[in-house]
Image 1 (tube, rainbow, N blue to C red):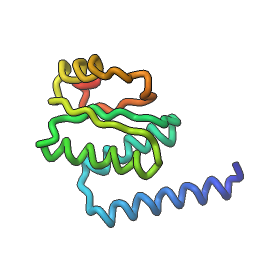
Image 2 (cartoon, rainbow, N blue to C red):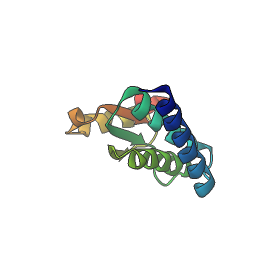
Image 3 (cartoon, one colour):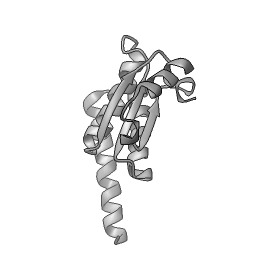
Amino acid sequence: MDHRLAGAAQRAQCRRQRSFLEAERADRPVLCAFAITEHLILNHGRRSLLHLSGPLDHQTSMDRRAGFVRAAVEHGIEHAVLEGDYSEESGRSLIASADDLDRWDGLFAANDEMAF
């Protein structure tokens, strides 16, 4: 890729991120989830992502989910959210119950415990 095109793509990405920040007035969990998800897409080439979320009656879980979904939608990738409770057992149970696990090429867990 021509370095001018790469630079233009990076500038466009920065404009989208600034626009997202300004439009949403998002807080840190949303921004971090968006950045992590976008990293998986842009730097690792992931095209189908699964998010193991914490309980969606907690603001942090809702914010992380929002950032994840926003990045997935913006980049046009397949995605899904499974709700857990932040525990290691919850993460294990969600993965065990996912009958279409081979469908996903990337995973974003809400916290370290769920990722184990």
